[in-house]
Image 1 (tube, helix red, strand yellow):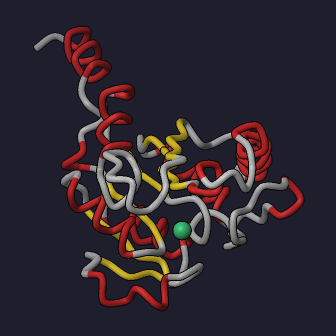
Image 2 (cartoon, rainbow, N blue to C red; image 1 turned 180 degrees about the vertical axis):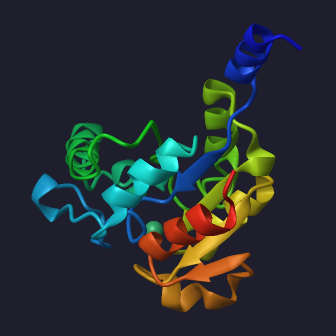
Length: 187
Ligand SMILES: [Mg+2]
């Protein structure tokens, strides 16, 4: 295979992604967070995301926001929070998928359903079988597992209440999860 052909085929090959829950995982848990000043990214996450990006991982947020469906806050307020988180994470988030659906709505998108991960996989040409879902609730882990990803539970946010969810790995917080990925899954 010529070097040029190798380069072209690797450009079109499906990529692995790190899927992140947002609240309680990438940033401190705030119930129905809808104000930029309430956004506090987990300390040290931005530096490690720079390293996972270097290794070729895509970074995609998968977040349930039933507060929108319930009328507690607007999509515009969600976007402002998102923008502030992206700023604190040095612009290292590649995509954001949000479900405003309410619990019990039979949604195909709201976690624990895997719909948003499948959507992202189509949009970004992601190889789900080489991807990882990181979150603080059983519903994050279930969604990741249903999509065929490896799963990591973090003990920030609601994580301590969801230890028994059957995640493949449990990390103190997202920085420990990212360090584990960088060390154990070296490419
Ligand atoms: Mg969460």
